Image 1 (cartoon, one colour):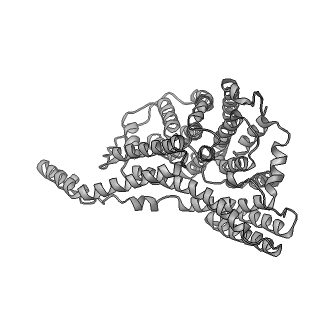
Image 2 (spheres, one colour):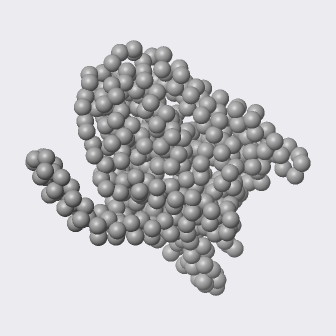
Length: 494
């Protein structure tokens, strides 16, 4: 979800197109421009150039080995300093500070929500829940075709509550271990996993950062997202069915891997589900920001971590006595290496570079929107009134630009669209990144994890099939949810 693409091989035209889309990237509540139109002023042009430079450094992260948060953090500070200086020159001090605080508040809600979700996922990983799932699949001795379908279906299901990158890497680890050395099968299955992981996060508010943004903006209610379930399934199944015919009917070598869940793993999973439920109830029943429910859930996890630490000596004593009774020396050695559960160590393992990058881009383009570039972009994209075409095109663009700026651009523009259109852009921005391996965090992560097996070209060969699934999911949404494309009793946004 959070990683940008490697620009190697991109044309100048593509980059400029991506940039002008990004020029609309800022929080939904910050859709207005400042009282001064600075789009043609030196301050505006310099700010634009700074953002271009910072973004180019971000895209060259793999080449320069420069973390992507650094250039955007610096650019964000300079851009807002330039805006504040210009407003002071015109005798309007203080207004930029208020605008910045508004932007910061919107980002903070999203960041804290993601931080809690990342902490829970890291805690489940540390308790070896995902390792146990992988070991179970390996022990079953599934055929290649069965493994193809199981990994895809699990990626679809798990990504609806975990981020698509974690889900894809988990399923890829299984495939790499079971089909070790089979480049063709690994590449094909990784393509299937990427498509499934992206589709699985498109029909639930916390399945993807884009759906989370739309939900927190209050545009679509929690229940309305589930109308995208069938289109999301279609988006996954159409390419998966076609690709499955190219999977050989044979069995991998049998492997044996035993994984024991650490104490409290299933209870932490239950707490995670309860935390999500609390966030939904806070937002739906009490009209409170979902982040309040998530932070409450983090407190519950901290209490449970306290319980695990306090009861650890007694648990170890019981297990040690049992191991000694059966003479299990290996078990005794493992018990001596147990480390107490620490919630804050799980928080520390969150993707801080990603979160800081997210902050930098939001603040950068919040400044560009305040300068006046957002209004220009909004007129160009949605001025003609053909919202369906615009939303489909933006979804396709998310295959070369990360879907986060795509969705932020639309939220910031706030076009007068029906719920059907808002659901359409949610769907297309979520699944459009599947067209290319560089179009989503899942694809980028797997290119590193399965280096030499899953490649850009290997994914590109299946792009026509994935595009067919994209088109089928859009048509399914337009057909099944036709009544949602009405605004005030008239057709809206076709």
